[in-house]
Length: 190
Image (cartoon, rainbow, N blue to C red; front, top):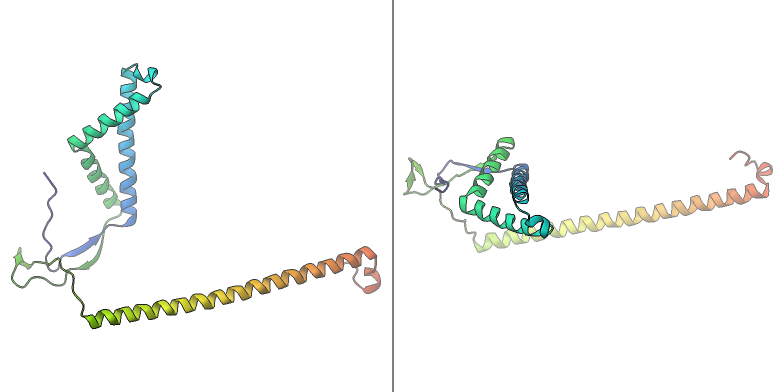
């Protein structure tokens, strides 16, 4: 029998699972399915000599097919998925992101107004205003990025000039020290 879904009503919470719950649930499901598969593979490998004759290829194909079909037909895959989802949600519970604020004027579910699954249509003026605002924000962000990149280029240029100046100074000091002029010019020990 399928999972029961309750009708949404005015005032009901909107829950969203966390990314970590999805990640943990998927990892658990993968691990459990891998253990089931390899356990079945080991049983088949021990029970038959086909593994030796075909270097394990026939056993892998046979077990994969049988385990997949059995889990599909028995519903075990769905039960494993549900159990993993429940474990992950207990570790990282869903968050309430909001509440349903409006409901139907003439339909009630358990004494509460029924929520409608409909998008709110904006007027043409509202859409144009939102588009203009989004375009202005995008242009401003581009200007910020361009200004930032100009400062980055200027900083790189100054770093390059500094590096060349240091290399030139090291070269002059090296030549002077090789010529033995350092003592006469007061550069000893520098």
